[in-house]
Amino acid sequence: MIKIWTDNREAGLLERRGERGSTFAYAPRAESARRIAKAKAAAMAMERRDWEQGILAQALLEAGDREGVILLTKAAMVQQAPDGRLGVVIAGGPTDPAMGGAAYAKAAEWTGDPQMKAAVAGLLEWIRVKAPRSADGILYHVFERPEMWSDGFNGAPPFLAAMGFYDEALAQIEGFRKRLWNPQKKMLAHIWDEGKGQWKDANCWGGGNGWAAAGLAGYAREVVDGCLAHQRTDGLFHDVVDDPETFVETDLAQMLAYAMYEGVAASWLPASYREKADRLRGAARAKMDAFGYVQGACSAPEFDRPGTSTEAQAFCILMEAAGARA
Image 1 (cartoon, rainbow, N blue to C red):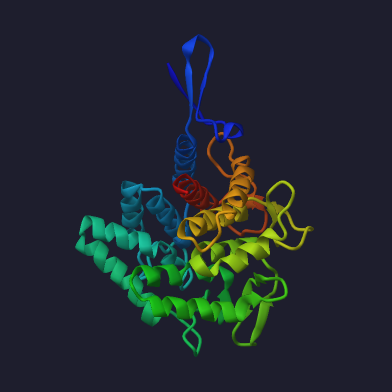
Image 2 (spheres, one colour):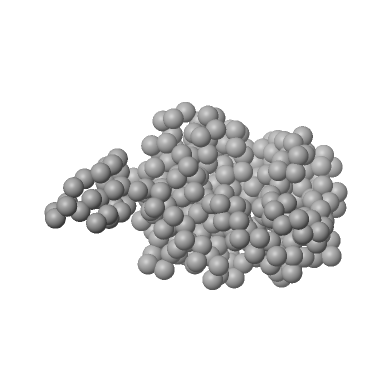
């Protein structure tokens, strides 16, 4: 009789013999697959806005779930705005829909569906031409005010890069970084007011720094290191990373673990970061409940308290998929 042993305390165990001839095989990928399935089931049951639909599609893309990506793309097309944005529920923001752009484009490639290709082309035109931006071309995060948010690092830049517009992606990254990077804290401020030429929210919000780390690839090490300097003994972080008076939050650990696994695999982080990523993953895994919800994340819809969110579910999937590949 073969039994699969997935308890994380047995990391490194290849095989051991039990009583009556049973064989126990350690299968870390089986545990990642189990958690991905639970996180996906919970996420698909949640109501989602444009960026949540998008980051979940990206998570399923990286987890190898082709059918899931196509289904989410078709659903995003149902909510396409006249200006080209996909997945828009209520009002939406200028760049939030781009979080799913790379996944939607892959779905269009797989299916060859002309309507899907047209939808992706419409989203790309919106991001490249129509979306509101500063005088130097850096995209605004909201319609109402000329603001750049740290969340934006994982919006337009990955989509532009996936579509082959590398210079435009880098220009967005550099524009965001110039405005939001705090060299003293070695983290990103949350919101820049372009009209006033100053930070509107100077707090180093964990979610924003996590979005940046996940979307920046080779640029992410300084963000990762800046956050790790404030890691708690339980492996997690505070919602405002350097403010211990704010609540303890789960999703940043997942975001950073994902970025670090990807960084080690791509060789822009040294192999020593794998152990750090494992610690983050262990802390985050302890927050998944029996239904697959990641608890203690910065909670939808206002992201002002601990709870659950689709993006936390998505980053659980991204973290587990990247960890299984590493």
